[in-house]
Image 1 (spheres, rainbow, N blue to C red):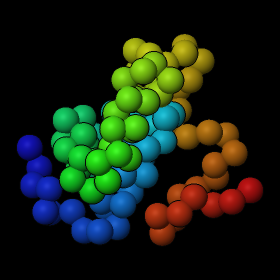
Image 2 (cartoon, one colour; image 1 turned 180 degrees about the horizontal axis):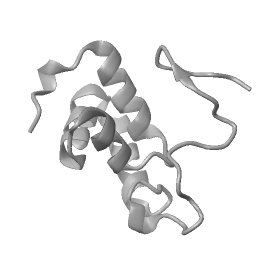
Image 3 (cartoon, one colour; image 1 turned 60 degrees about the vertical axis):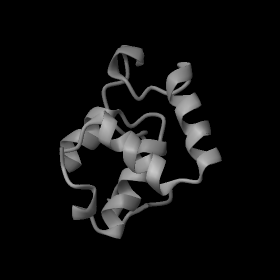
Image 4 (tube, rainbow, N blue to C red; image 1 turned 30 degrees about the vertical axis):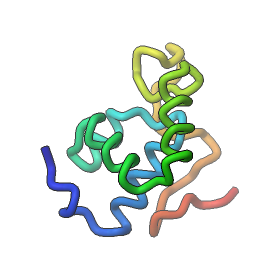
Length: 95
């Protein structure tokens, strides 16, 4: 388990952004930051307002989100949408 305090604010912000995106699986967060799904949940619980966290958890568990690879459609094999070009300075480039 990685120490939550070892991340700077930019990294925490990026983890939250990736966790909030429905199409970004937990595997991508694990690959980039070396933390488990449970650790992502813990970061979300600590950093979000209680109501925002509850909405996020409900969406992730409802089947709407594709956070878990087994829930994803077979044709989806990437972490980002086609219109998302690059991620730089923690902001997604606009079209």
